[in-house]
Image (cartoon, rainbow, N blue to C red; front, side, top):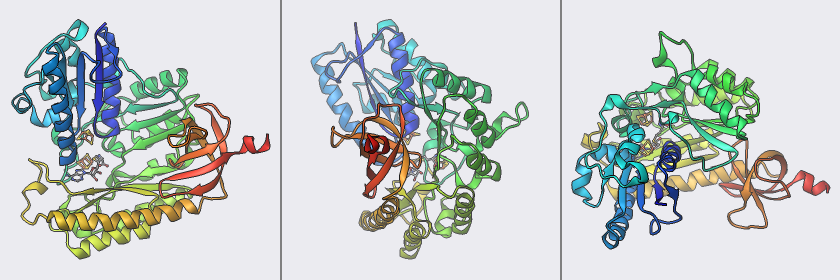
Length: 442
Ligand code: SAH
Ligand code: SF4
Ligand code: F3S
């Protein structure tokens, strides 16, 4: 039997696409290899959000090309956002690549590779209007009790720094009945937690008009009503589209977790405007207040960019103070990376690498300090933990996640998939430590 290996870069959307790629390859009759060396078909599912993932892919492909030189029978297939950004150029940049496909044409990978995965399809890019939901494809799930569910593809926002709309296309929502059917199927298979995925989950459904009149709040309620689903997460909501019905649904649906990843990008209204985020610092803060009024236990995480063109020391200080004022439970901090073809890449006042580096280090310090204090405040309390498996650092402990999405390493006797109460006994800026309550009693 021929075997495949998939290497995934980028966001949860890509990780989920890789589950579809694997499912499809298995349908073609291939088995999964443990390493690239042992594989006949090497797939790379790429990301191009910043320059760093581009560089990581280049390094990986160098290794793959060397393997192929030793064994010319190996097939190298490259999918995902970097492939879509480069399109046909990919074949001249990386002559070892046999098959290339964008995020919207995973379904075609089967035709290009053919049964057994022998195929070679240079220049195999679909046109934009052939984009299909990968959700209709077979699925090889990586986790037994947790699952990603795609609710939309593409993005209609115009964030000045972002390449995603160019590589993932206009937003298309999946029909509510299809989403509910998939979640019901997953629940019947034993899935306890679903994460609804979209570039902007809060604009979900708008493009279904006039056929279907709905919104993301309704979708949350429909998924909440499915038997067996204990936890619902979603990522990401754009702050500009976070409306009252969604906040109410979050507060009223018992399965919707007390966590929102709410990308702020900057704390400076002036920078937010230049980024075309279409909200101000004040509007962001007002939204945080409304969310916390409705869901008092809510954990908030965010994405922040430093060194956007024209960002002054004062603008940057406002991002620092936003972190302190909101009190984020965690934040991904990114150094601005110009992406070719985006509006911001053409702006005149690009920040120097030194300034960006220095600012991101200061910001990380503040983010970690705030997150550490937020987690420390939870010591002594009891949290509901969904068990995921053994701890990654200490195999004598279990690992799981709280409803607020914090990883907990704990002493206990539960099995993966169970939800158990854990007393929190220690905290770092990113994880908690504790003991399962039942285990204490025993
Ligand atoms: N659709 C999601 C985010 C997708 S990209 C949303 O809007 O929330 C994930 C994160 O990458 C963004 O939130 C942003 O913080 C960061 N990012 C995107 N483009 C970037 C760039 N050119 N340079 C640095 N960070 C970037
Ligand atoms: Fe990019 Fe903005 Fe769309 Fe998110 S909302 S994917 S940051 S353009
Ligand atoms: Fe995700 Fe990277 Fe594409 S962040 S949408 S895989 S550019």
